Length: 410
Image (tube, rainbow, N blue to C red):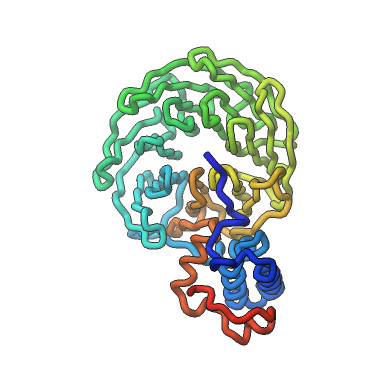
């Protein structure tokens, strides 16, 4: 899948906006937004929108993210706020699912992301994780066997299969890019591989045992490599080229303390986050000999979740302290300077749509409504233009640039 621009080059400017004078002015407006953001976020929003719609330079795109991602999101409606154990976004981000701590599966229609609607609430016993299959079904993991749910009629979800094994639990679930392969894992270190070609009739393929209690698992898009994060500070890489005969190919080491999260960016790139506050990117083209590509620093404490989004051009990472950072992966090397999407606060659980730039957050400790936001500057700009208060005034424009005034929303 071609990478889409998130931090830069996303479109949305006027015809001819790529002229050097327009680009320079956009960068000036973006720089001014950075200067005033801490004291006057509303002015920063107006400056950022004007910069991006003038010319979507890297600086203007980053200004949009830094000014709008924290406050410009939609809340998923519910009868009352709740705390959550797991969340998921469907391919295309037109559906959202969540498992709350009371044992309820909640579904939303997010096809109009700034006007989501609740579709259904269904009791589910002992559930803690949820993932969408590319074909639209849900897989729910927890204290018992994982289950498969048909949500074709979203108002009436129904269980259609159970992934029964002798495993003590199935808290961790990972699926391949095409949905044909799935792995479940739990506290007993058991790794079960499943053929999901027919989601209503899963076929168990093989059992393996990880070397440490897993904290997270991820399957590469091709399904050929399984990454298993462990409490022992290592990431096991399993070769699933022959899914009926999994073999441990190699181990990625470097984190100090437990590795809490793993996510594939591409078949040959893996991201991880750990108790040592670092986010790391690994070259796993040869899973027998993984190599660290870079170490990203921005969190003050443990990193508890990582997720690839925007077709591999961005990575988001969540800290135990409630921070959410965005990392630009669109260049030759990951940018070491993250965008702060959410400041420290209440912890949350995280999901991201890997084929778009939507991110879903749900409270883990303090009851709240789940929040859906975009990391696409063009989407943020389009939504911002619905609010006349975010249009820069001629006076504010003239204080930054000598270019003739342009209404950013015309």
